[in-house]
Amino acid sequence: MLLRRNPLNMFGYIMQTIDSHKFAKCFVKVLSCLFLIILWTVFFLSLPAPHAYAFKAKVLPSKIYPGDAFMVRVSGLKKTAEPSALFNDRPLHFSSCGKGCFMGLGVTDLSTKPGAYRMRLKVGKRKATLRMRVLKDEFETISLTLPEEKVSPNTENIARIKKEADLLNSIWRIDSERLWEGSFLLPLENPLSTPFGTKRIINIETVSIHRGLDMKGEEGEGIKASNTGRVVLAEELFFGGNTVILDHGQGIFTIYMHMSGFKVGPGDLVSKNDIIGFVGSTGRSTGPHLHFGVKITGINTNPVSLTGLKL
Figure 1: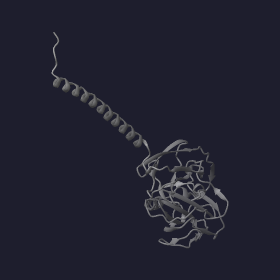
Figure 2: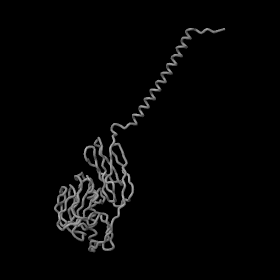
Figure 3: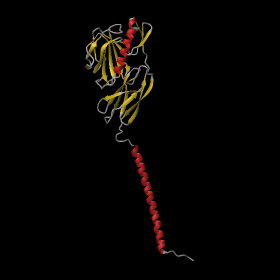
Figure 4: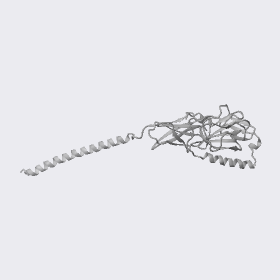
Protein backbone atom coordinates (compact mmCIF):
# COMPACT_ATOMS: atom_id res chain seq x y z
CA MET A 1 0.00 0.00 0.00
CA LEU A 2 1.55 3.36 -1.09
CA LEU A 3 1.84 6.14 1.41
CA ARG A 4 0.77 9.52 0.24
CA ARG A 5 2.91 12.54 1.06
CA ASN A 6 1.34 15.71 2.24
CA PRO A 7 1.61 18.19 -0.68
CA LEU A 8 2.59 20.94 1.69
CA ASN A 9 5.43 18.86 3.16
CA MET A 10 6.57 17.98 -0.36
CA PHE A 11 6.68 21.62 -1.32
CA GLY A 12 8.74 22.47 1.78
CA TYR A 13 11.16 19.66 1.03
CA ILE A 14 11.67 20.87 -2.55
CA MET A 15 12.21 24.46 -1.43
CA GLN A 16 14.70 23.33 1.22
CA THR A 17 16.65 21.38 -1.41
CA ILE A 18 16.73 24.37 -3.73
CA ASP A 19 17.93 26.65 -0.89
CA SER A 20 20.68 24.18 -0.02
CA HIS A 21 21.96 24.21 -3.60
CA LYS A 22 21.87 28.01 -3.67
CA PHE A 23 23.74 28.18 -0.38
CA ALA A 24 26.38 25.78 -1.64
CA LYS A 25 26.84 27.79 -4.83
CA CYS A 26 27.04 31.02 -2.90
CA PHE A 27 29.53 29.51 -0.48
CA VAL A 28 31.75 28.37 -3.37
CA LYS A 29 31.57 31.82 -4.92
CA VAL A 30 32.54 33.45 -1.61
CA LEU A 31 35.51 31.09 -1.23
CA SER A 32 36.58 31.82 -4.81
CA CYS A 33 36.44 35.55 -4.17
CA LEU A 34 38.43 35.21 -0.97
CA PHE A 35 41.04 33.13 -2.78
CA LEU A 36 41.35 35.74 -5.53
CA ILE A 37 41.66 38.53 -2.96
CA ILE A 38 44.46 36.65 -1.22
CA LEU A 39 46.26 36.07 -4.54
CA TRP A 40 46.02 39.73 -5.53
CA THR A 41 47.18 40.83 -2.06
CA VAL A 42 50.26 38.60 -2.25
CA PHE A 43 50.99 39.86 -5.77
CA PHE A 44 50.79 43.54 -4.84
CA LEU A 45 52.82 43.04 -1.66
CA SER A 46 55.55 41.45 -3.74
CA LEU A 47 55.80 44.55 -5.92
CA PRO A 48 58.33 47.28 -4.94
CA ALA A 49 56.78 49.95 -2.78
CA PRO A 50 56.47 53.35 -4.44
CA HIS A 51 59.41 54.68 -2.41
CA ALA A 52 61.63 51.64 -3.03
CA TYR A 53 63.10 53.03 -6.24
CA ALA A 54 66.34 51.70 -7.67
CA PHE A 55 69.62 53.46 -6.95
CA LYS A 56 73.22 52.87 -7.98
CA ALA A 57 76.21 52.56 -5.68
CA LYS A 58 79.81 52.14 -6.74
CA VAL A 59 83.22 51.95 -5.03
CA LEU A 60 85.99 53.95 -6.76
CA PRO A 61 88.71 53.50 -7.86
CA SER A 62 88.73 49.93 -9.14
CA LYS A 63 92.25 49.32 -7.77
CA ILE A 64 92.68 49.92 -4.03
CA TYR A 65 95.85 49.21 -2.03
CA PRO A 66 96.59 49.23 1.72
CA GLY A 67 96.61 52.83 2.95
CA ASP A 68 94.51 54.12 0.05
CA ALA A 69 91.56 56.46 0.19
CA PHE A 70 88.48 55.38 -1.75
CA MET A 71 85.09 56.81 -2.59
CA VAL A 72 81.55 55.41 -2.51
CA ARG A 73 79.27 57.20 -4.95
CA VAL A 74 75.50 56.71 -4.59
CA SER A 75 73.29 58.06 -7.38
CA GLY A 76 69.69 57.84 -8.56
CA LEU A 77 68.21 58.82 -5.21
CA LYS A 78 64.79 60.43 -5.34
CA LYS A 79 64.77 61.49 -1.71
CA THR A 80 67.26 63.45 0.37
CA ALA A 81 67.97 60.61 2.82
CA GLU A 82 71.74 60.64 3.35
CA PRO A 83 73.42 57.24 2.96
CA SER A 84 75.51 55.69 5.71
CA ALA A 85 78.21 53.02 5.53
CA LEU A 86 80.93 51.42 7.64
CA PHE A 87 84.27 50.02 6.56
CA ASN A 88 86.34 48.21 9.19
CA ASP A 89 84.02 49.69 11.84
CA ARG A 90 84.76 53.27 10.76
CA PRO A 91 82.03 55.46 9.27
CA LEU A 92 82.17 57.07 5.86
CA HIS A 93 81.16 60.73 5.82
CA PHE A 94 78.72 61.36 2.96
CA SER A 95 77.96 64.67 1.32
CA SER A 96 75.98 65.81 -1.70
CA CYS A 97 77.50 65.53 -5.18
CA GLY A 98 74.49 66.82 -7.09
CA LYS A 99 70.79 66.02 -7.47
CA GLY A 100 70.09 62.53 -6.11
CA CYS A 101 73.82 61.94 -5.61
CA PHE A 102 75.96 61.42 -2.50
CA MET A 103 79.61 60.51 -2.07
CA GLY A 104 81.48 59.26 0.96
CA LEU A 105 85.21 58.94 1.61
CA GLY A 106 86.75 55.90 3.26
CA VAL A 107 90.26 54.56 3.75
CA THR A 108 92.07 51.26 4.11
CA ASP A 109 94.67 51.08 6.86
CA LEU A 110 98.27 50.43 5.88
CA SER A 111 97.98 47.10 7.74
CA THR A 112 94.86 46.02 5.80
CA LYS A 113 95.41 42.53 4.38
CA PRO A 114 94.87 42.01 0.64
CA GLY A 115 91.59 40.30 -0.19
CA ALA A 116 87.88 40.78 -0.78
CA TYR A 117 85.84 42.96 1.58
CA ARG A 118 82.16 43.75 2.00
CA MET A 119 80.67 47.03 3.06
CA ARG A 120 77.09 47.56 4.23
CA LEU A 121 75.38 50.59 2.73
CA LYS A 122 72.14 51.96 4.14
CA VAL A 123 69.83 54.50 2.50
CA GLY A 124 66.74 55.15 4.60
CA LYS A 125 65.20 51.73 5.27
CA ARG A 126 66.97 50.09 2.37
CA LYS A 127 70.27 48.24 2.59
CA ALA A 128 72.82 47.07 0.06
CA THR A 129 76.11 45.19 0.18
CA LEU A 130 79.06 46.69 -1.68
CA ARG A 131 82.07 44.59 -2.60
CA MET A 132 85.63 45.83 -2.92
CA ARG A 133 89.03 44.21 -3.24
CA VAL A 134 92.25 45.39 -1.62
CA LEU A 135 95.29 44.50 -3.72
CA LYS A 136 98.74 43.57 -2.50
CA ASP A 137 101.37 46.31 -2.66
CA GLU A 138 105.16 46.10 -2.44
CA PHE A 139 106.67 48.91 -0.37
CA GLU A 140 110.34 49.70 -0.85
CA THR A 141 113.03 49.76 1.86
CA ILE A 142 115.61 52.54 2.18
CA SER A 143 118.44 53.41 4.59
CA LEU A 144 118.88 56.82 6.19
CA THR A 145 121.52 58.44 8.41
CA LEU A 146 120.27 61.07 10.87
CA PRO A 147 121.69 62.86 13.94
CA GLU A 148 121.63 60.42 16.84
CA GLU A 149 119.65 62.82 19.07
CA LYS A 150 116.79 62.68 16.53
CA VAL A 151 116.78 58.87 16.55
CA SER A 152 117.44 58.15 20.24
CA PRO A 153 115.99 61.15 22.14
CA ASN A 154 116.97 61.84 25.74
CA THR A 155 114.56 61.77 28.68
CA GLU A 156 113.56 65.41 28.26
CA ASN A 157 112.80 64.97 24.56
CA ILE A 158 110.88 61.76 25.20
CA ALA A 159 108.54 63.70 27.49
CA ARG A 160 108.17 66.35 24.78
CA ILE A 161 107.44 63.72 22.12
CA LYS A 162 104.70 62.18 24.30
CA LYS A 163 103.13 65.58 24.93
CA GLU A 164 103.11 66.34 21.23
CA ALA A 165 101.63 62.91 20.43
CA ASP A 166 98.78 63.60 22.88
CA LEU A 167 98.17 66.96 21.19
CA LEU A 168 98.04 65.36 17.73
CA ASN A 169 95.71 62.60 18.89
CA SER A 170 93.32 65.23 20.26
CA ILE A 171 93.34 66.93 16.84
CA TRP A 172 92.49 63.70 14.97
CA ARG A 173 89.37 63.38 17.13
CA ILE A 174 87.95 66.70 15.91
CA ASP A 175 84.66 66.15 14.05
CA SER A 176 83.74 69.25 12.06
CA GLU A 177 81.51 70.15 9.13
CA ARG A 178 82.76 69.80 5.58
CA LEU A 179 85.00 72.64 4.37
CA TRP A 180 86.78 70.94 1.45
CA GLU A 181 85.64 71.70 -2.08
CA GLY A 182 86.33 69.45 -5.04
CA SER A 183 89.44 67.35 -5.50
CA PHE A 184 92.50 67.58 -3.24
CA LEU A 185 95.80 68.77 -4.73
CA LEU A 186 99.45 68.04 -4.01
CA PRO A 187 100.97 71.11 -2.26
CA LEU A 188 104.05 71.21 -4.53
CA GLU A 189 104.41 70.56 -8.24
CA ASN A 190 107.70 68.73 -7.67
CA PRO A 191 108.89 65.11 -7.96
CA LEU A 192 108.40 62.73 -5.03
CA SER A 193 111.43 61.59 -3.07
CA THR A 194 110.06 59.07 -0.55
CA PRO A 195 106.70 57.37 -1.26
CA PHE A 196 104.04 56.50 1.29
CA GLY A 197 104.58 53.17 3.05
CA THR A 198 108.36 53.09 2.56
CA LYS A 199 110.23 51.07 5.20
CA ARG A 200 113.07 53.23 6.49
CA ILE A 201 116.09 51.81 8.32
CA ILE A 202 117.54 54.75 10.23
CA ASN A 203 121.15 54.63 11.42
CA ILE A 204 121.29 50.90 10.63
CA GLU A 205 119.14 49.75 13.57
CA THR A 206 115.91 51.79 13.88
CA VAL A 207 112.99 50.80 11.62
CA SER A 208 110.32 53.37 10.72
CA ILE A 209 107.38 53.14 8.32
CA HIS A 210 106.90 56.33 6.30
CA ARG A 211 103.26 57.28 6.75
CA GLY A 212 103.32 60.32 4.50
CA LEU A 213 104.84 61.54 1.27
CA ASP A 214 108.18 63.35 0.90
CA MET A 215 108.34 65.90 -1.92
CA LYS A 216 111.45 67.60 -3.21
CA GLY A 217 111.62 71.36 -2.82
CA GLU A 218 113.90 74.35 -2.69
CA GLU A 219 114.48 76.18 0.58
CA GLY A 220 111.84 78.91 0.91
CA GLU A 221 109.59 77.56 -1.88
CA GLY A 222 105.90 78.28 -1.25
CA ILE A 223 103.70 75.40 -0.04
CA LYS A 224 100.04 75.43 -1.11
CA ALA A 225 96.99 74.25 0.83
CA SER A 226 95.71 70.99 -0.63
CA ASN A 227 92.10 72.10 -0.17
CA THR A 228 89.96 74.57 1.73
CA GLY A 229 90.36 74.10 5.48
CA ARG A 230 90.98 75.63 8.88
CA VAL A 231 94.40 75.77 10.52
CA VAL A 232 94.28 73.71 13.73
CA LEU A 233 98.03 73.64 14.36
CA ALA A 234 100.99 75.79 13.33
CA GLU A 235 103.98 75.16 15.58
CA GLU A 236 107.39 73.51 15.86
CA LEU A 237 107.36 69.78 16.70
CA PHE A 238 110.26 67.49 17.65
CA PHE A 239 110.02 65.18 14.64
CA GLY A 240 108.05 67.31 12.17
CA GLY A 241 109.79 70.60 12.78
CA ASN A 242 107.62 73.57 11.75
CA THR A 243 104.29 71.89 11.10
CA VAL A 244 100.91 73.05 9.82
CA ILE A 245 97.76 70.94 10.05
CA LEU A 246 94.57 71.82 8.16
CA ASP A 247 91.15 70.51 9.17
CA HIS A 248 89.05 70.06 6.03
CA GLY A 249 86.01 68.70 7.87
CA GLN A 250 84.43 65.24 7.93
CA GLY A 251 87.51 63.77 9.63
CA ILE A 252 89.94 64.76 6.85
CA PHE A 253 93.24 66.46 7.78
CA THR A 254 96.34 67.36 5.76
CA ILE A 255 99.76 67.73 7.41
CA TYR A 256 102.73 69.82 6.20
CA MET A 257 106.10 69.27 7.95
CA HIS A 258 109.72 70.52 8.02
CA MET A 259 108.76 74.05 6.95
CA SER A 260 111.23 76.93 7.22
CA GLY A 261 108.39 79.24 8.26
CA PHE A 262 104.63 79.79 8.43
CA LYS A 263 102.32 82.12 6.59
CA VAL A 264 99.21 81.14 8.60
CA GLY A 265 98.22 80.76 12.23
CA PRO A 266 95.78 78.64 14.27
CA GLY A 267 92.15 79.44 13.46
CA ASP A 268 92.85 80.83 9.98
CA LEU A 269 90.52 79.69 7.20
CA VAL A 270 92.50 79.03 4.03
CA SER A 271 91.40 78.28 0.48
CA LYS A 272 92.74 75.66 -1.89
CA ASN A 273 96.10 76.77 -3.37
CA ASP A 274 96.72 79.45 -0.71
CA ILE A 275 100.37 79.64 0.39
CA ILE A 276 100.51 78.40 4.00
CA GLY A 277 104.28 78.14 4.54
CA PHE A 278 107.68 77.52 2.97
CA VAL A 279 109.89 74.52 2.27
CA GLY A 280 112.59 73.93 4.87
CA SER A 281 114.54 71.28 6.77
CA THR A 282 113.39 71.65 10.39
CA GLY A 283 112.80 68.69 12.71
CA ARG A 284 114.05 65.21 11.80
CA SER A 285 115.18 65.99 8.28
CA THR A 286 118.21 65.42 6.04
CA GLY A 287 117.62 68.42 3.76
CA PRO A 288 115.00 70.81 2.36
CA HIS A 289 111.81 68.97 1.45
CA LEU A 290 108.13 68.76 2.37
CA HIS A 291 106.61 65.87 4.27
CA PHE A 292 102.96 65.85 3.21
CA GLY A 293 100.58 63.66 5.21
CA VAL A 294 96.85 62.88 5.19
CA LYS A 295 94.62 61.58 7.97
CA ILE A 296 91.09 60.33 7.30
CA THR A 297 89.04 59.26 10.35
CA GLY A 298 92.31 58.93 12.27
CA ILE A 299 94.02 56.67 9.70
CA ASN A 300 97.25 57.55 7.90
CA THR A 301 96.35 57.74 4.22
CA ASN A 302 98.40 57.70 1.03
CA PRO A 303 98.17 61.33 -0.19
CA VAL A 304 98.53 60.23 -3.83
CA SER A 305 95.37 58.11 -3.50
CA LEU A 306 93.38 61.05 -2.09
CA THR A 307 94.55 63.54 -4.72
CA GLY A 308 93.75 60.93 -7.39
CA LEU A 309 90.04 60.89 -6.53
CA LYS A 310 87.77 63.04 -8.68
CA LEU A 311 85.62 64.67 -6.00
